[in-house]
Figure 1 (cartoon, rainbow, N blue to C red):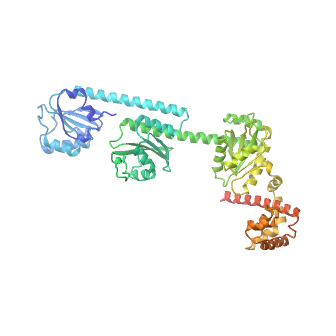
Figure 2: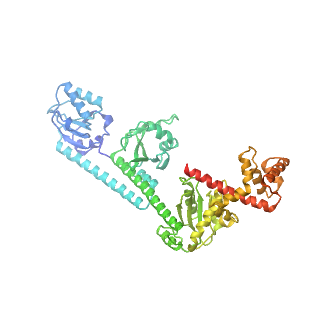
Figure 3: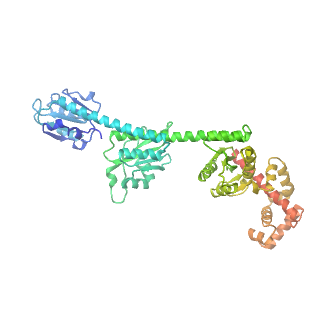
Length: 541
């Protein structure tokens, strides 16, 4: 705690003579930062605030208007307390005008009932100030040491806010730029109520805070509306968390209405700085690690390094893929700027404790995953499906075949991208679709689709009565007409008419199994081409 007027008046030297508090009782909590014996009338211009002024009254005029002006000048200079020796050198009684003006201004005014060596008062007050500075310095070092240990241990903002709460014994709340509470330590009933209505607290309570400074003045808590008003005696002080000149969030401290002592304010300052360092470090470390992984995977894709060199370099990034079966996973991205699938893929690998090098390669997210010996590729595919990662999964392989595995994963991902919803496609499940994927890279697949489905596609482009959905349902149901009609919610007679129309357009019988197989492949090819075009449009927009 800082040395207050009340604490200073409790020093041993003031017990030697009786004294009377004439005014300013409500401000005895003011901090004393220095002590001055003074006997000149114009001392106010030389004050910096927080001074304890000791005087025999020789510099105080005897006119009431001058006494009021003297008190006003000291109050405007933020003097902490005025102590007058009423021993007869200038006054034996406290002037009424001085008392009235001091009371009006809230300036603590003390009269000593006898002579008191001011040099001893100065010595004891200065000793108290030095002791307080030592306590503040000790507390600062203690908190700083705590923060250094936490930073070196890689702890996050939750640990920092808890350390602050432990140091100042008050509730601490950390919110981010979206006004979301991200850490809450040492809660009380009052702070719990504030957190439960945090949007109101953040947007309304601090609505009139000045945003020019970083450490803002305390704001009184708004009553909860429950009939009880514990908030009337409580307040909140917040400190901006600044990262490279931009506000990342706010650090809030709930406290009583008398405000926070200097050590607590220093601790808040230090905590805000450390939270900023921790957040920035986490961002930079994560960004640098992602860049290194991206570069490593892209080098493997380009053939700049071998699979064995990839494993060696991955180890330098903390990803130990040695002596493990490997699979490549290629996750589909909806847009070029979408990072959700990359986040999901990383989280999915971590949730089953598998080491993985993950990279953003533009339209996909590629991961090289090391399996445990008791795991196989279907288990990984099943886990990815549960996690909602739409992706393709290669066969397991050794390091020497990683390039092939990446190609397999991309082929499977192309098929996964053509399906709606979140689906994982294994390369081994592609079958003939593998050929379609390879053909889709050139004009061959488009030509095949046009040869097989061109008449139907041209009909649907110029008619409100589409036939392609009927053909798709008929083929998906293995030419079972009852199931097809039920799926389309139409009568069998309507289905027969549509099938006859399809046969006429195609010039072939849908009862022929070879025809149906060719059309089925063409539909898969059409899906691949449409998905590729849709993704191109999304990236360009």
